[in-house]
Amino acid sequence: EKGTYPHFMLKEIDEQPFVIRKIIQEYQAEDDSIKLNEDVRKAMQKTDRVYIIAAGTSYHAGLVGKQFIEKLANIPVEVHIASEFSYNMPLLSEKPLFIFISQSGETADSRSVLVQTKALGHPALTITNVPGSTLSREADYTLHLHAGPEIAVASTKAYTAQIAVLAILAVDTARVKGLDLSFDPLQELGIVASAMETLTDQKEEFDRLAKEMFETTRNAFFIGRGVDYYVVQEASLKLKEISYIQAEGFAGGELKHGTIALIEEGTPVIAIATQENVNLSIRGNVQEVAARGANTCTVSMKGLEKDSDSFVLPQVHELLTPLVSVIPMQLLAYYAALHRDCDVDKPRNLAKSVTVE
Ligand code: F6R
Image (cartoon, rainbow, N blue to C red; front, side, top):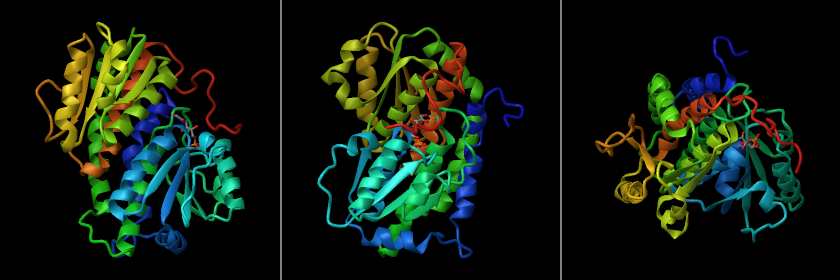
């Protein structure tokens, strides 16, 4: 039920702080350590390489998850689009572990990979919002997202839930391996939940920005570096699927290798700047497009902001910034669709779960 909300999408955007708190509760043991299925733990300890398989928004969450597992647990990770992997399988390592990320648990492209990798005898873990789903039943192990039903076609709370669960999984793996980490994901996720609330309380701000940037535009570009590059890919998918604006997410440094040719007077370019090591370089990219007439908007993290920024995000742990930087992107997409009179919850040509290959 939508309750007082005009659309499921807006309700689901607003639910994100509660979903994060629910995940903390579900994955916390009584002594405040991480509570996780022992078999999943063992599978993570045994593997020499993780293969994340997913589609769409879940694929974008997988890209963020790769950072966690590589940086925290020190295990190499490949992230693959399910529909590509299924007919073009890369060389596998000796002890692969497959992680399927899927809100619905019903995506046919992902299932096709699961069927193939199971036939090869490789273990599979599904991270899903629907525990009884096909991908959950057919995999060896399941981790639940606890996001509650997601009705809007555009995925929002499932994305942030997937990232949160992947962070917990990565830290747990690191701890079991005996790696010394100062990062406490459950505590840091608590900070994230409050930061998310601060953002969802400022909707008018994003409504105004969306009107200004997207009401009549033909196209839009999003840029970021490092983990922000992963978030801008999600930002552009959100915008295009519900507002029908042609949008792309690019790595900041890649623009000058071709795409910058598309920048005209007034072209919207939205940059995310949450990472200290690339703060100067992403800002250089914003200047390059501004000099060619782009209508730029920078969303930065507190501590890294400049006077010209359109919006400053509350500070969270550097690894977890996608959980907060994506909220303005979801809200911008939502309001862009409203300003263009689009059917927010049921965009044309799309279905909530894609059960054909
Ligand atoms: C985008 C969106 C899709 C899904 C994709 C995978 O908002 O909803 O891109 O993310 O179809 O679906 P699941 O996660 O159910 O496998």
